Length: 423
Image (cartoon, rainbow, N blue to C red; front, top):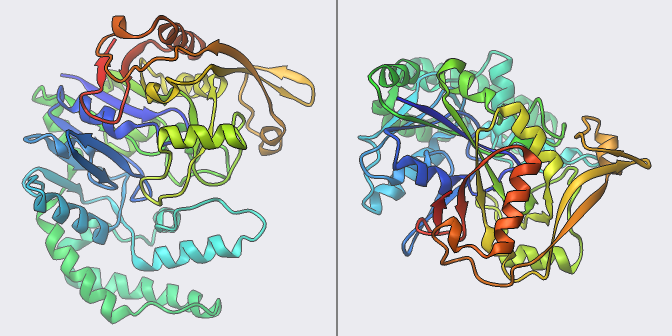
């Protein structure tokens, strides 16, 4: 039995969906443990492309059981849509999916509140996806949230929904915003609740029973370490723990049960939304990297900000999350570059450091210190083993591993499931 956690160690969008899909072949159960529909995992299998927001990526492996854990905030309309779409594409879902009865529910009023908050922050925009994630986690912390378990008792669900919707409508009216149509929304919510009710379980009991019986568990994270509510570039972060600590609270698994932690990194760095990004490339260099990597958000379609690999940020993330194996994605995006750079230190007010600062003002002052590598100038797309890689690509990857103090485990050289190999 093994329980393997997988997290992103940059700012998200590292290609976790593909790596999860690959690791699922060795797993029996896949559990998503945090975040919401603000995340998007893209997996390409042959000529088919799948973009998932709430469903664990393991659902694309036939016969695997998948769970949405209690740490996830679940948009019922998004989840119904994803399930329906996959079943229309002949992928069975409802007989293989369990939804935690403790997972908090994202309501339409959360989305309205999210958009209003972002638009009102004229000076400091977070770059939220406006999917209602922050307000849902806030209601959870304020002890007024609605949970998936409420879907099993429709009379109670309706009472709680109407109470919260009326409270939010008072806020919307005070901001001269359009109020939520409570009656129409309840009709839609009731239908979604009835659709999802058969899948609602106590997943904490389920996953621990599966572990006890000897099943292999894969714990699927969303976003990336530097968006973590505690460790990330606060306040430009998400509303959940994207580090490995989210596994225990979001899936109900004891720390001693996690046998390995996979950390996923791109061979360069990207970030979506606002906030500090020390190695960001501006101008044509950044545009070229974005075009080569097709760097547009799976959830919003927003262009991602692109830059060189940041070893300082990744080493910190590896340290905190105890990453034991590294999966490097999108190596092929660098194939045609003459020169490739890695950030090995920061300068802040003339002082050199190899530590990632917590202060947002210090982050804005960073001048990255780079080490340069000659590009390999040949395609890695058909490489299926370490030995197939060009020598300069091997040198680059070895340097990344040494700098961030985590051993290489998987290399990805393209978006397709087949373009992946273990080291």
